[in-house]
Length: 318
View 1 (cartoon, rainbow, N blue to C red):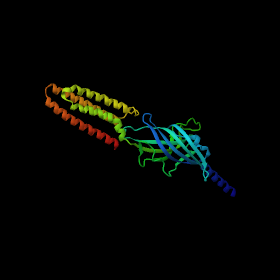
View 2: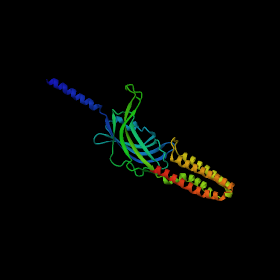
View 3: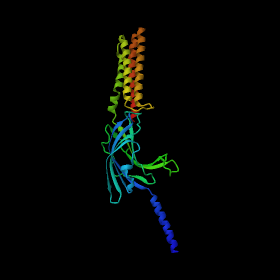
View 4: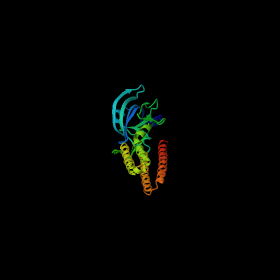
């Protein structure tokens, strides 16, 4: 009877040990972002400078070799140190500078908000061996994180999850072409300090409109000058749009830049059409009627242009 009891006790002990050995190790991860800079819209990338620390038991994890930043173009480990804590865990602290690829939302440029993401994984150990847990103690970014941008209040998020890859990476032991790795994710939303940039980018466009608007105040004896000024304003607006577009990535959607430039081009065309109508009135000796038409058309065009501009800019901001 004692032998039977001892046999069952050994079975229970070994089964419990086997289950414990199958439990993945937990890696505690913390992050502190020093700066986000070199935000490049044309190349869809930015540079992030941060401190990353990890606490774990299994020395085989060796994040100095196996740290993976999936969305990074380049990863520069400028410094790292390894220590052993009182509880036996390994403590690794490293400083990273990463050039990250990301997608930009430019529909409301330059009144845009961008969601920046930073993710790490271990390239050698999947979720059956390693699970990340976030270290939430303390602040996670400097108040001088960005230049020309500001961090949206309460937008900073750190979390962990499982990343599924629909491939076995050539592993013959896997029956399905699926690999799952634990990851640690950082998300931060930044907003541009945009009004000065807006004036810098669009002042050429607004001057083009004002040139077309001034055509209404040129005397009827100089009608040729009105057409010349309007055509010059048209080319100036088109040139300004090309300058602004050169700093943005290609987009299939209609952005605020497209809307405002399109609106300006339409109103410049309206001014040319009004000049043509005025010329027709002058040619038929309806001088007073042409003067009244110029005055009314100028006021109506200016009011509608300002209202539409204000509406589209308001929508982009709010």
